[in-house]
Structure formats: C-alpha cells, structure tokens
Image: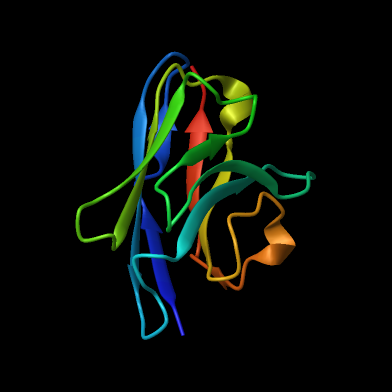
Length: 124
C-alpha cells in the first residue's frame, strides 16, 4: 500500500507562486514509483499536470503548465514537490498527487494511489 499526503495549496494572486508537496509512504512505495500531479476544477474532469518518472527521474508536463511549473523529487525519493509560478486564474483547482508502480502515465485512471487533494485558488 501507498499513502500520500498533499499539502501547500492556498489563495494567491495572478502571477504569484505556490509550492505543493506530496509526502509518500508505504510498503510498496519505492524510489521507482512514479508520482504525478493532477488537478480538477469545478465541473471539469480531472486532468494531468505533471509527472516525474521513478526510474529515470524524467519529468513530463501538460502543455498548459510547461515553462511555469516544475516537478521534483527529494533525495530520499519520498517527497515530490510541484513548484508553480506565474499562476493564472485558470490554474484554480483541487490539486492531487498520485502514485503508480505500473508506469509513468498521464491518464488518471492508471493511478492506484491518491492524496486527499489541496485547493489552489488564483484570484485577485
């Protein structure tokens, strides 16, 4: 099993920055576990934001956040951070971290483990 706790959301003005953290634990969470961030806005489907591959450390981003968001993993491989900059109102959503031991997928239904979500609101 894998447990994920995501934190760091809040209210920020357009153009501002936020840092989300995903703390992972559990018997089946390893350095090779792939970890991604997804978001869901009201009335919309959950969408891919970013993922970092457990095996290679390579990061992938949705086009909508490329160049503004950075995903990284700490040396112990148990915390994954999503650094968000130049935030826009359309970034407003509940953000979830997710983990998969099956592959580095962009589809939410490929992930077995989810954090509880953290609200990000971008508004003036």
